[in-house]
Picture 1 (cartoon, rainbow, N blue to C red):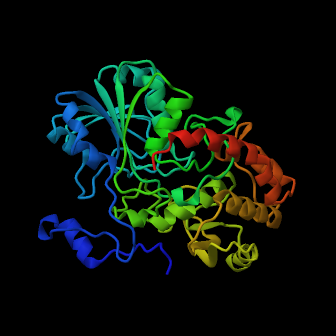
Picture 2 (picture 1 turned 30 degrees about the horizontal axis):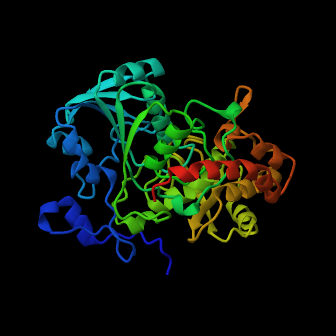
Picture 3 (picture 1 turned 90 degrees about the vertical axis):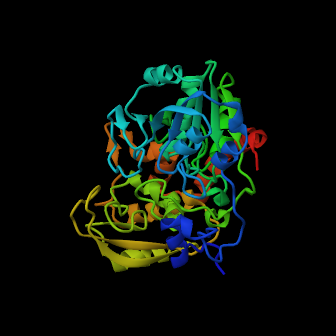
Length: 415
């Protein structure tokens, strides 16, 4: 039986809505594994006793809840930590914003504090804000991918705290795609960008957010005072449903765990003029364009023989993003389970599209720069595809960078 089983029982939904009506919660049926205790749960049941009355900045968003769906802000305040303000990442404190919001600060009456937007403040402002606190607490559900901006937020916080007499406390959470291992090119410095290509690691870095903090401190920011609160009962490579934690969509376009797994391969296709289903009911599970006929398109994809995926012809009309309100032909992507290389899947699919639709398919550019180069962390992904080189050649080309990273990363692992 496929281990990815994301069904939620009616009884579980009832308990979520009415938590006082039952003694226990089980979010996933037949999922195996055992209940993992997240960093926030471990912290408020022990180490928090060292921080009564401490003035804290909390880096968090809508994912900052414990197993019983209690918000971290209140959990910390109940233990005497004075959460003075919140630093919120992309998509905002409530996780619903699709468009990038650059407003620097708002006041939230529900949480009763100011919310500073990490995308709307510069590095100097961030460092100034950090200096107004005693401690900084980081508690966000990461996705284990360099292009996912939450890991950039961690880097920015650590850069701002370098050399300051302030403690950074990272509350660890699972890596949902850790079972896929390391994947993709190590970030080449000349392709560093402000958001999606900032953290110096491969495309999939195979670390939890706590391990990533240890790695970045050890290799790049040794003057950061760091404390990581590990999870309890977590094993390296666990599927998220095996943790028995509730899936809280980390961003608006990853509504399910399955969509987040497909996302690892599909997100690189942001680098070509293809709709990835943003603005539909199946973001990152639909791909297509107005110039694609779905039946022949799916046959082309099936002929690639990607054993972890199947493809169904589909038409869709995005309500926003690429090809807004235009009918697109394409494929619905079904993940069938198992381990795979997201970079290989993207390389082979993009290569097939560029060959099949030479007059329509194009690389997305921002001025002189190609979007795919930032996403992939190298221009060799694009250059090798344009030259018609097979995946095996690109894999061999990026292998030395992965090997060097793996050696450095080893000493920072917790699990």
